[in-house]
Length: 391
Image (cartoon, helix red, strand yellow):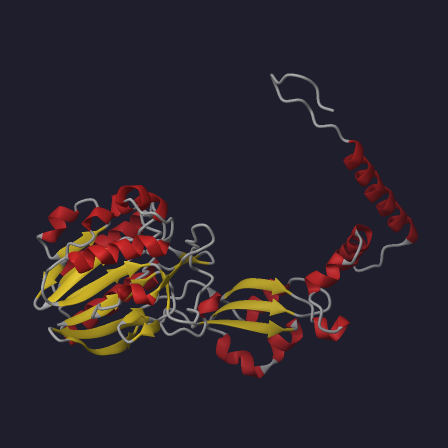
């Protein structure tokens, strides 16, 4: 049987205020084309279908349209992720089963497979440890304990066939740290969010969701990653889905299918003059860009000047080159050593062009001294209706 493993669609998400719904619709078209061309028997969607619990109407419409188109070609097994509202996503799941679309969002469904040919597919929706701990009588409050119990239930099921598991979690393998992105929401409980890959021992294939970069933890334990880049930290990631072949004997083959790129992303760093004049940067005029300026002083009208050459510049940062000024110290480290008056004088120089004179500096000194004195003697006002007086 041929499976297509995808996850983390995050329908309704934007990229630094750029609307991505068109790009997400293009991915849906690509998904349908892949299902048709590769004769996929089941599409696995491992959570985070939406970007938030209350998705925009257009995102819901795209989700509905995509499921209807998929159902006309193949079977679908889909779980909720930590961004989804399990209750809202699970509405109508019983009716959808008859259409070959199996949406699983309730932890109590864990251990009951969707059977297709010689494959038993076990959907494990995102398990919030605090939510399932009391329901399942877990001794430990952790993601590892929650998924461990889920896998105990799956192993206790006697359905024959190769086992395939869908899960949405932060899974690690040995000493190799997974590749994380800035666009993933922290799911740590008590400071811990990681689950060892060994929890899935004995499973033919585990289709993971949550991390946005594709990665292989073990041959049969993989993240598909998000189909679109949702942060500049994903600049070098290839996006797409895993095409997985399994049969009664287990996992047979895995291949990656790249998704279309709506607009490439990149990060540029340098002085404004360098970025505007260097011919090597011509290749980035069509990219979404994050630009970090290293000029000693913030240039006037930097964003407007950058967009004249790079019209899709979305993020502008300012980090004066530490090496050129004070060794290897960062800008934030140097700022910490400067007084409030010195920083205020620097600001006046940047916005006005002239150094602060003796009279202006004296006025600033008086203002900062007055503020410090006020902070020492300020008495908080008593709360309305409160008893006693503040001391």
